[in-house]
Length: 245
Image (tube, rainbow, N blue to C red; front, side):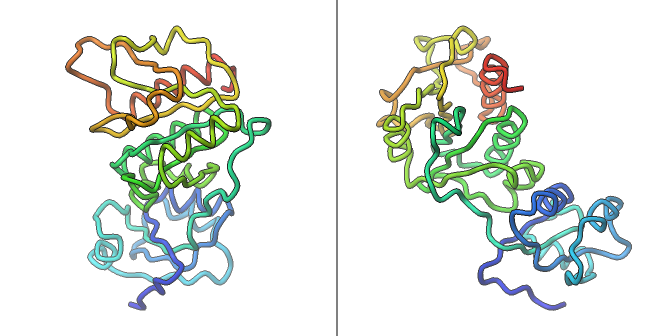
């Protein structure tokens, strides 16, 4: 088995991530590894493959080693790096944004990005500080839909909110606080940015005063929604009110 060139390449695995990468056409698939017989969904991928792409047939154990997981659905590839947005968002063009402040589980990150795509948000900001990377696991959890999103990488949540406030965005910060306003009763105003905090500690203290605190009512005070689930509910509430979906 020929080893992939690691420099300037990114691991990607799973049927949907490979399919959506090929459909989105924002970056190139460089090499593909699969098994013989090929996976059941191979025809979906085969129809999208560029001419001349190198395909190597290996056993499942080799795929496990390449992917670092068994969750690859017998398809592993290496692609050019994900293209993050270089210029910050404009309130005239991108009126509904999502800021993820320290989401640390790649599966939660991917699930949230999937919801952002489904609810037609215009862009996402993720932070370099204390956050999960947008890696192969996150891309798989997004069902490959992260490939279509406009994602900006900020050094920290505070740096992001400073830019957002400067540009005139209204910030809505999701917190687990009974004193915060019920998210279902808010009149959301564009341009806006929904802020989701980390799974353990929530939103960073230094940005809590930068916008309106909102919350999702729940059955008991000592329980909470999963970060990805809460994000999906909030994204839907906002998108439905704004008639974005």
